[in-house]
Length: 205
Image 1: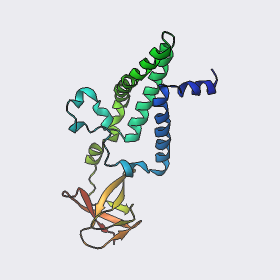
Image 2: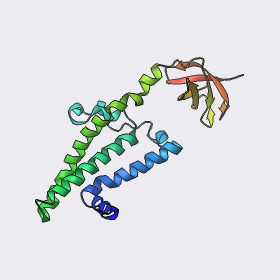
Image 3: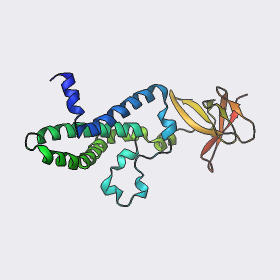
Image 4: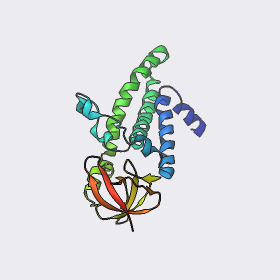
């Protein structure tokens, strides 16, 4: 089968419903690996807000909320594309016409749900790697040196990068007075402000 013919089959309904988003999210993920632009826009987005959905434990896999948004979406749409491709190919051998169209439409939510379950199973071994709470709990940042990552750090906002045992950690930071520290300056982590969940830093002398 030629590459063009294969891509043509991927673009047919209903496989295209999953294939097109997969390509989009895959490209976004590749760009994010280089420029790290997605995390800033999706930091407060929970892919599936499972805590506020009654009965969600029976409907949506918990694992998908523990991995980055782009990874979960990309894997889910890839699995859905594969399932839809083969399901549609098999269905065409038995039915056709309007019956096939109805079957394809009905298959979309079924394929989507099955792909979520399979994606959760595939991503489960990787979930601990993306658990920030568990990762941060192993490191005591107080007293460590860092460098300002945002444009400025002031009383309201800021970010610093801390290098610890070869790993870089991006921390939300703030100052305890009305001064400011600019990008690239070296700082020391003084303490963590529990109210704002930010680390108070001071400029390194």
